[in-house]
Image (tube, rainbow, N blue to C red; front, top):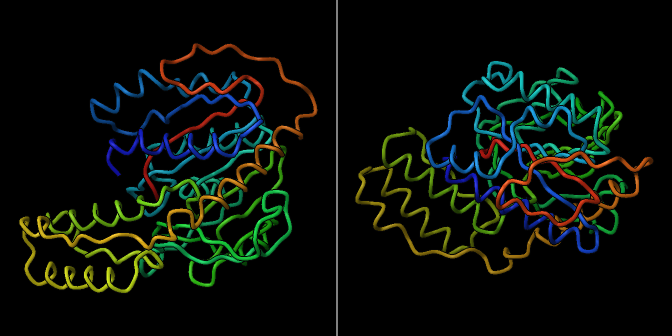
Length: 322
């Protein structure tokens, strides 16, 4: 995803944390891995609102959220940020009460700690999928036996491999495979292959972005329509546009993209479940603190959301997705 997604990713997580926190006071600090190339606007935003990753190593946070990026290599160990990401994973496992690893970050975490390689999919796991709660856990307490989550990825991790390495699988989809899985080290490590933080329009925006890439000859494969996302009429219009674009690819086609809307029920299809799971996570972090940690002073960057100083959260964001 482009640098313009930086602020959107921040807003998604801030919205989710704010709605999940309720009476739990939290503070949030943002960090970014330094090896990623950025445009001028993104660099300016980072300089104004983010701390250096070097500030993280000597800081004390109760929890951390590590997001993913769009890989350039089939082997994550060849990514330019791999050394920094490993260090963040090690720091999180040793210094937090619990940490969340989102999408590619989940793949990186299990590769680093367990040597588990993710597997490429024949087609993108893209859409909103039904999932079943397959284990009782504090994170899924009070959650419905069935739930929906958005996914957007080209790779997956085999559930049998995870269980053989001691991971506990919490939710699973027939189509999308494992979503939430955990393992306890010194910290409770929580992994999401899906994206509970997504807003209702995010998958649609990703789909349109990839259509633009196809029409501009920036990619050879026309993107698949996200599953479980549109009603029948919208799906038929999008398929008709796809046939037209594949037979006569030219820039002017973008002016004729069909005016379709998402299924009305999607607006809250997964947000309530996401809020519940993050609420449970924050409650776990709050209650699992055996010793009250002293506050470590960090300079407050302009625009950082500070909800309080009780539960301290660090978010290391790479912005884009696996």
